[in-house]
Image 1 (tube, rainbow, N blue to C red):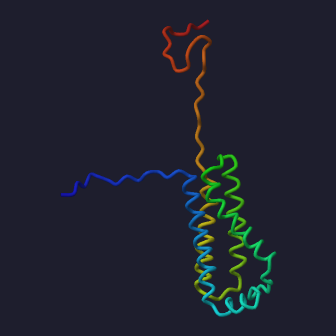
Image 2: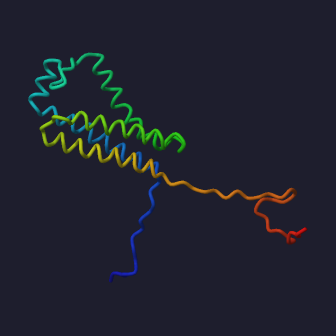
Length: 164
């Protein structure tokens, strides 16, 4: 018999883990959209001819190095989001995710293939979610204990303070 008073735990996820997971998802979508592109004859023929269709870039050492640098940044954001202290983590996540969202939108302009548009929309939503979570990163107020010379912080006073 089911006890209707029970609920499942809904553990609050740490902000760093959320950001890291979103970056990982974005990188997967990004990679698969590019991989699926090789089923397109225009992309495959362009690659065989040594050019990027539409953009007209020559596929050479410089292009592949810059492309690698472009994908290394969000790939490294997966680890950075987990490791970096909040004072760096928050602004870097806001700036990098916003810039990448803009670059994804720019690369989708003029695209007619539905898979590419769908992938770009999902990437953009994930990146804007990263920016939103980083922007609204919760703050914690820490209470500082006032210490009295000769007393241990947190100890219970044995006498009440006198007023003058």
